[in-house]
Image 1 (cartoon, rainbow, N blue to C red):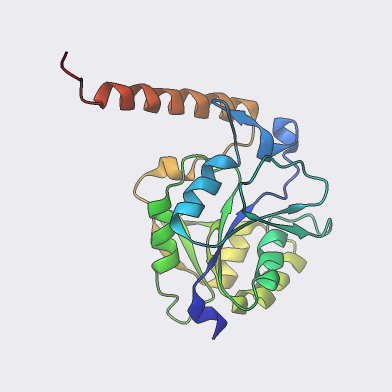
Image 2: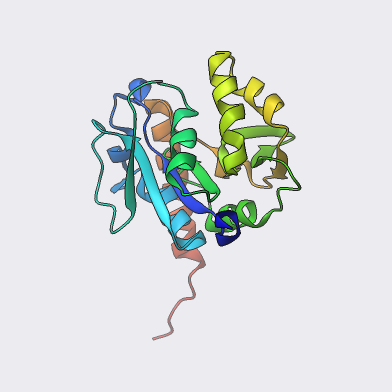
Length: 207
């Protein structure tokens, strides 16, 4: 019954962000906290949204979004997905990493609306390569995720174990993630160019 209520949106924000100097949710990107970009897209896509993080991670203002706390250990990218599923009351969770500033609400809604076809997860993919941290997980995925974590394999091994439904992403920019200062500079330049183009495309008011 809980699954029929639809997914809860969850932003994964529990990573250390070591390569970018820590504090990834609050890293500034054109005057906004990095977290705000995927959070705003998720809140447009779904009515219920949470941010899952660790207790010691500093967060920006969330404007009413739920905050879920995951355990400090294990320190694994999938730990937040498992914890979110356990906190979601039997409902699926639509997860997105904190460092995806270009993800759109349209893509998130596609992932949420794609049928599971009896499988535990629907994942975004680019050229057939799945992104395990961007997708919609059913509660049935939890034991498979635990098994994958205990094997200490990479995320590619997890995809093989889950046998996901794949949703191909047409615009690969939506999958751009920020891990390093160079990534941040590149994202800043791309967003700045987008804003400039948007201003140029606006109709001019005749005087």
